[in-house]
Structures are given as C-alpha cells and as structure tokens.
Picture 1 (cartoon, rainbow, N blue to C red):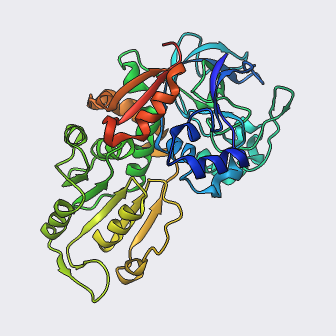
Picture 2 (picture 1 turned 90 degrees about the vertical axis):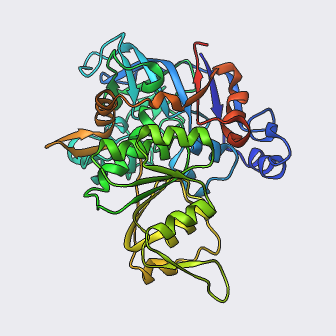
Length: 417
C-alpha cells in the first residue's frame, strides 16, 4: 500500500537544521526523512484488532513542528521510526478480528491514536496507572516494547499512532487499530466534521478538566484547530460567561465567533486593550515589558505554546488565575516565571483525551465530542480549508506550514483522492 513515512536520522536532522530555512525540500522533500511510496500492508495481530481503510487524515501543528525540527527532542524516546505519519484519522472498517464487538465492517470510525497498555498486550492488573485510570495518552510504558506481536516482532515503543514503527498512521491507504481505539460515527455527521474529532477532543478534554468554571472572562490564545476547538468545547461543556478569542486573521475570527466566542481580538494593542477592560492597571518597570496589577483573566488557554503566548498568559492571568497549556510548549529561553509565584498562578497541561466525568457517567472524550457535535450542530467543518490527495503530501505540508500565506486552518489528506 502507499503511505507517507518519516524516519529520524542524524543526517536528515543535520540537513533539516542547516537547510530547512532555505528550502522546504530539506523538511518535506527529497533531502528530508519524509518519503512517499509502497510499504507492507499491516496484518491483524490479534482477535481484538481491526483493519481500516483511511477516508481522511489531518495534518496537525505537532506534525509540522516535528517535520520542521522545531519540536523538543525530549519526546523522541517515546516514538519509533520509520513511521507512517498521521494521528487525526477518519476511517472505514474493512476487517475485524473474531473477538471484536465494538465495531463492524462498513462502519465509519474515528481513531483514538493513543497506544494503551491493552494495545501493547498488558491486561488487568498488569496495566499502568494511567491506563487503569482510562488515560492511555500518558501510558507509562510508552518508552518500551510491548507483548503484542506485530509482523513477527514485539510492538515497538511509542505513545501514539503516527509516530509508531509498528502501527501505521493515517497518511496511508490502510492501517490497523485495537478495537478499544475506535469510535463509530453517526450517519448524520459528514466526513469533514468527523475527521476533526481528534483535535476537537483535545479541546474538549481541556474544557471538561477545567471545570468548575468561574464567572470571570476566559481568554483563548491561538487561531488553529485546537484553539477554535477549545472555544466550541467550552460552550458545549456549559461555560456561559465572556469568552475572548485571540486570533490573527479575519476568517479565523469569523470561525471563533461562529463557535461561541463573545469577542475576538488580535495580538498586540487589541489584546492590551482587552486586558485593561478587565480592570487591570498597566505599569512599566525600569527594564522590560509592561506589567499589570488587578483585573486579568481567571482562566486562560494557551493553544500555541510559543514564547510570546506563554509570556502573555503569565502576565494576563488574574491573581490565583489558571493557565491551561495545550500548545506544545517546549524549550523557551529566558522565560520569566515571576508571576507564577507573585500571583500564585496555577498552570496545568493536558495531554490528548481519555475517560471523563460527563452528565453523571464516565464517557471517553471522543464519544462526548461526537455526541456534542451532533447536539450543538456547530459548523466546525468550516475549519477544513484544504484537502489534498495523498500523493500531493508535499503541497499539503507546505500549505499547513505557511498559514499566513495560504490561509489554511485545517489541511486534510485523502488517500482515495
């Protein structure tokens, strides 16, 4: 079958670091570790496994961060390569193992890409604490081989499909998954909306885990699918207060308002004005940037994780405010953490999704997101700005990486195109 693979090697890393600013070929093309071609088709490794035909697969900001070598190397031990990329996946079931009860052939499914202890071959009391709690995204066995045998060898290390040498991701024609990773899609939901279930579930997980909500205004930093998903998820989870979305471009602002934002602002002067409107007073230290006293936002979601947004969140949070980190913040030199202790801030990071408390019972974030998309009827498919056939993966990656130029929000790959 055809697929887009990524391999991490020292030569490709050095080429990407030295030439990546000059030519995208060093990042996505012939000089990089990215390849498009034929690979062996995966076979079912057990009775609870399912074979899938990929319908659509998204390009995530974390994919761009890894391929452009801007992500932290700290997570490298928790992946295995070469790997078929793609962890945002809408697929159709084509074959099921004899013990599968969760799905049946012909169904459309969204794929939770987290690789749990169960998928690794550890069951019952042998599962790690995270998997026992229903949060496999933080499985503590992600850095080790498992017991499940795939292609004659033990399943390799890896936190998630898409960066896993044994489990092909969505940037291919077909893949396999454990039935526990699959969530059937209602016929009333279109493919583009269904293909967004994974990134929207990230926002929903953060929103649900941030309850109870306070009455003060909430600030969401970022204009990508995660940030826009947080705006929608906050409303779906029951937040009724003022919701301010900081975005960069007009079409993103339109989406944010359509998904539930009370108002939208741009970084810079508009953001400062919004901060002052909360009742904050501005002060200028002898050296450094403007700081604030009073006012502020009780809850801030940083969905970018850059030096600028982390710095802004620390300064814009009210005393004893909460900051949620969803953007893949990594190494940030000279980050001033003064306001963490000076204002007694709470900083919380969230990793993907898992079991949640919702409406009196325990549900997986994917299921809650699916059901709330149908219930709210939100036009989230507006986020899909570009769809490319798999063979045009280089153009797709370039479109996703150059948002200012292309206006992209979510770029999808269609292996059938």
